[in-house]
Image (cartoon, rainbow, N blue to C red; front, side, top):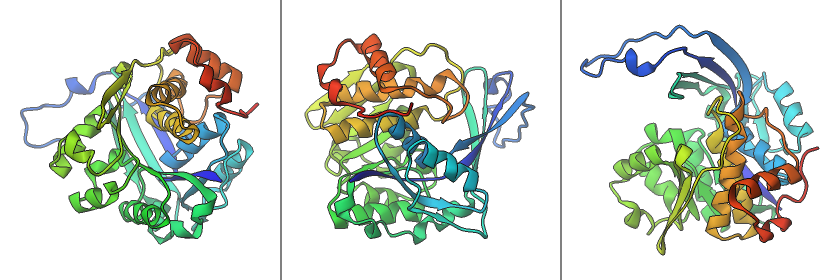
Length: 322
């Protein structure tokens, strides 16, 4: 059985602006027309599904990606297989390019991003039921083609498999109907603190009402850590301490990998959040969403460094990439 990761597959173009966006955006104007001259540009492997899957592999899981990629994906596919990610369920479309994510980050780590869908638009052609419930431990439905996201939640409900609904940046794109349909029966809704407010506005519901539709709401809060809101109340865990703060892109995806490992192991919520926070902190320490590496021993040492000894984690992360 495996953790199934659905979501975008993309090439990331990361750029740095040596200033502050707030100094160049006029809030009293009805129109917005700005251009930022960047001084760095790099291409990295990205997309929410491979980012989450890569971190799951580091944590000893053997995840499978379900998604759509294009004619420029072969090198990426070989890389994912080399680090322990199963790509056999990815649909390759030779008449499309793989999706492209472009982001500019300023000196305050604020970001302005754009996304070109490319082959990702074909993800709606994938039926998750073909994987089979017997082969699935958990599913995470991360940002993808909006129709595909709705289809995947319906498939999870039909198969009776637990799923995490992670709409993230697609909250700005999807309709209320798509959001409300996708929420139904999710074990976890995961968002950052800004996205939680977007979700409440989109749905017209506060946290208490959202919890009538989902089992729990996990909220990442940047340098303030992460929280889980359930019908029993709220638990908050402070962030792990990074050794350096370099680039925030992909931090949330790494957190979700820790979340899934904890859910799959059946840990309590406090432990799950500590795993997520510890996995996330590696990403912010360098540029790129899949350029960090660690062994099981190094990861557990990082958890202990931030949160003390957690005996139950001796059964965590059975096999890491060497």
